[in-house]
Amino acid sequence: MEPRGTKRGAGKIEAAEPHNKLPRPAPSLPTDPALYSGSFPFYRRPSQLGCFSLDTQRQYHGDARALRYYSPPPANGQGPNFDLRDGYPDRYQPRDEEVQERLDHLLRWLLEHRGQLEGGPGWLAGAIVTWRGHLTKLLTTPYERQEGWQLAASRFQGTLYLSEVETLAAQAQRLARPPLLRELMYMGYKFEQYMCADKPGGSPDPSGEVNTNMAFCSVLRSRLGNHPLLFSGEVDCTDPQAPSSQPPTCYVELKTSKEMHSPGQWRSFYRHKLLKWWAQSFLLGVPNVVAGFRNPEGFICSLKTFPTMQMFEHVRNDRDGWNPSVCMNFCAAFLSFAQNTVVQDDPRLVHLFSWEPGRPVTVSVYQDAPHAFLPTWYVDAMTQDLSLPPKTPSPKD
Image (cartoon, rainbow, N blue to C red; front, side, top):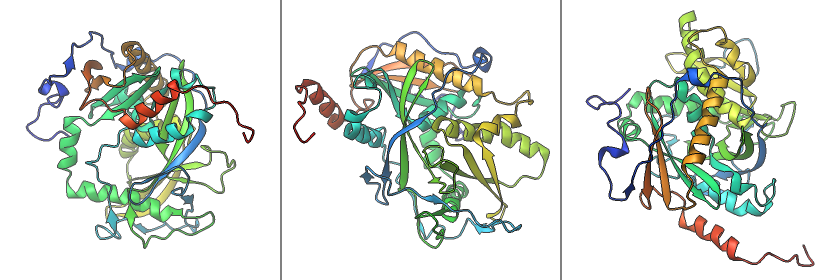
């Protein structure tokens, strides 16, 4: 929902023309689902290149210390009866959402591992680097009716970097977030605490603090159509009992949703929520989403596993349902549009792609701050790489 008194689309960057805005390129990209209903495009099975963790202070560590282990309650015929309100707000440490992290954590990982990327030294130059969450928004765009988005794009050393910009409407919503919605967000994190242990075979400890600074992120390589992708996404937990211990196939995504009582409620759930769950998990190669259904009092009364590859079956015969081919074809079309639009190699030049429901994707161009998002430390280190002579192997190598 939009805040009252604001017109949809009024929250666009264009509202106050900054002095550093450059002439707008003409082309735009339509988002109508009917235009993208061809066969499913090629999507390379995502393979994990590495990972990193963010601790309780949101500090980066290039290891898996924040990874948690799936530990569901024993199936005893009764509901799990988890109290998702327990600990709110006194045992809750929410992340500071005012801090705009952009691609920084992923870039730090990339800087530390740029020498060991599979695909050879030239692979990165042809790739697109972004967060999985940004790609999820692209996948769901043809069916999205509520929320617009903005993606900033810069090309540097051949690589195209995509970083989300918070829209003015999204910022207004975040700042005016009602208490009930804040508590619902907590309940989603609390569910994870009930379902995860700190070590394989351990038991969950729901008595501790819920700290949303902590995160385990997988870094993956894939390809959509002819677009090589390097992206990172947060992972809830790994299943020590999974048939394969190979990430990402051992990962599990945890979700909560309100308990449903009528076919109409299920239909709406399949059309809207399941689309987002599918997009998020399919991109990363996560095979299962485990959902906890909560009653109005905030207790989880049932658990259900949704295999990612079977989610579409719930809407396959629904004429108002979604189609995975449309999602992936639109995403591929957007990536081509971005690759063809951002031709100049310059880390300080930003093409801002903006989209509002019911409209095509449009582009505006900016130079330097506040739109430039590739940090100086990253640009300098990568530039220095190019000017260094090739490393000669020393005897200990």
